[in-house]
Image 1 (cartoon, rainbow, N blue to C red):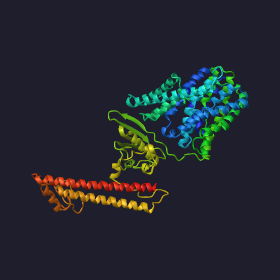
Image 2 (image 1 turned 180 degrees about the vertical axis):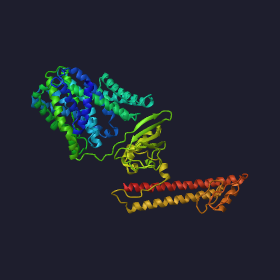
Image 3 (image 1 turned 135 degrees about the vertical axis):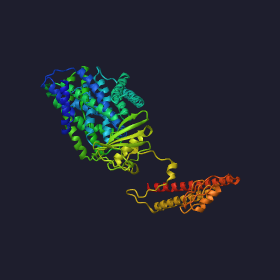
Image 4 (image 1 turned 180 degrees about the horizontal axis):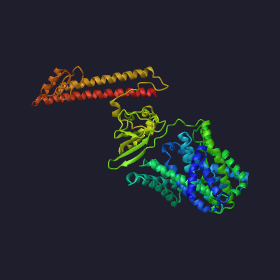
Length: 640
């Protein structure tokens, strides 16, 4: 029976992807069809078992969500997500509870429980729906982080409201929530960092052990948070977030494994919740559920978003989308089992109201979210696909083997291998195209659909991956044109590197035309650089003539190495005679001394004088280069 349920649920994923409906509705329908009022007639009313399995499933779902969340996307949205999951939850609980008390007629205890239960956005619904909607990364990061953060305070509130006896002091409850969140966050970050450190430094004998180890670390974070009387849900999400962004070996395989476990957890949890509900008892609770849901969707959520976003400068279009994207799912239904286990009066009615509310408003919000994003012009449909880089450690070589495919729409299409400009220590070793593999050359042109193998040493592994992602997003000029992002840019050159080869931007930036002063400074800088190169050549030739180790400059104007004359035959012979050797022949070529002669007393003094002269010319050259760099800096400052 379980195998048949899994097969039907997996086939239902295809139906949900085509229809745009969240898959949780289909899984709930399977559970209801198997229940006592359905086709199979299975009688199930164990709320405590449902709560335990629901908690375990939520741990896996949060772990999968944390592993798949990119830190660079949610980092700018962390303050907003923190406000939505704390202040926003408090506002939503108050508004929803007030509506349930005055509009539906529930007492304050039941109203507060419903307000707390439905104020949590569902991580599974958010992760499954939002990742199919091409929203800006800031909005996606805020909504995903909110769904991962707000489970913790909501669970604490539901447990407190379901406890026997009244809550004497509300500020004590707020202090307990803050303490549990702090403990859970500290344990989650610590466990995630220690786990990532261990997996990077301990090579496991099989690649299949890495996904198991990562999921075990995430579950250990939940256990540690719960044992320390902290928020285990926050701990598991933060630990998974750290692990998912720690550049561990075989991370794509780990994410795939976690995604598979997440699907199993969702299927099992939703089917079990469908079994727990009794359809013929829902008739009297449909209207109260619609009223509470309308108050939640049209009033409580928008007000909570407005209050939470007040400290931030956010456009009204993004506020509108945040208000509509507060998706509910299995989390409210699982939390509705807490008052049933605690034997709160009329807890079955609370469960029925929450069940109907989740189904109805998921049907309304889920399919309309892409349409609303398009109407608000918040879609990012032209965004290029990110590279899924697979890393396998090469222990003896202290290197990594990176493999990735070039997705459709990637700007790496048409780029030559040499134009990737990978750091020293990284190289493309194999290109697989159309099932045939070949060793690429510098002029090999990459195409969409190619599979690449890149070998990188350990010190440059992160820099190589950043460069590959930058080229995929911005093309071969990604770093120069500023399209690679800060995390994809190579380290800034040192001053010595910058002053060694002064360069000038040869064309104006878009929207700006250089003024006459800017062009004059650029021309002066170019003349100073040319003069510096001329003095350098002259100084080296003069130093060489006085040292007796080099001939005078010939027609090419370049000095020869010590002991050989470069330039005219006369200069070659003179340099060789002063050094005590014999001169070679050939105009402008190098004269090779056949054998050095005995050192004369004047030879050392002559070399010292030449060295002093050369040192003076080098000082003049450095001064000229500094002047040139100062001119370039002034030009850049004027342009900015």
